[in-house]
Length: 386
Ligand SMILES: Cc1ncc(COP(=O)(O)O)c(C=O)c1O
Image (cartoon, rainbow, N blue to C red; front, side):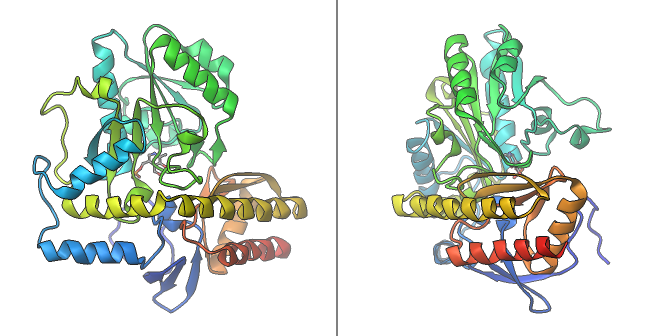
């Protein structure tokens, strides 16, 4: 028995520790983690960089300082994120949804002087659970019975350039997109759609907001997923893998937009704290190395091969979608998906189920090739059984 609000379908085992790509339960079962706390624990568990940074931070005697107080790693992380993305200015918060809230507020503020207030979001999109973030998320179930969500939002069919062109008008302020959709079932933006977005944004002076919360921080083999597409987003949101388990959100805003933001426009008590920024700085530095990103790419290629072999062996699978270490196995129906999800979980493999039909794979980026093979073998054995 517990007193947790029933917003989740809770697991029936208790996790007590982790190491590398493995989690251990209270009754000493070893679980291979193909989820990483849903694309969060980018460096896995018990990683020396995270541990050492926490120890160093403890020596200062401080974990928190308020938003206006400046400290070294807040500076350094903002410089690093800016340099490695759109050269913009950074607002720090504590989660993905908060980084989206900041992005929406900043975009709407920018549009208000120009008489623009419509945002185009995508079908199958997910941007978080706060009311503002829900306004640009397409899943109606998440917005049921809560009254109106704010903002004028139109939903474009993902990867449909014709539909995008139809929706654009002189009121359009911004397009918000996950270039690799996560909760919507791992859907990969095609190059042609990205090119249309780029052209439209340039021609019609529309802001491009890239949600990099799930697909960013090395997950797809590049530090940000949008970098696969030759676009330069006006606003970028980051969270999840950025702190490798420590809550942090960041909204990176191009200078021509950030220059309009006044003191007091936005804020966050915990955002940009000393502990979080120090950890995120060291995590980002660790991941944003050619060797590290190349290893994600090559493990992604291996995973792609293994998953496609599964697909050719088992008729239950409808489609494999993958970019780097972000993959979805879509099954032909939700009953089979649920069965495989439960069965693999019983055999010690941690994954997540999205859109009811798709097993999502987002392992720690430090996972070993052997561990990927082991996890796919568990899935294959379970498929064999049914
Ligand atoms: C693409 C994307 N955006 C936003 C969010 C919301 O992040 P958080 O749960 O940290 O608020 C998520 C979380 O899954 C996400 O995947």
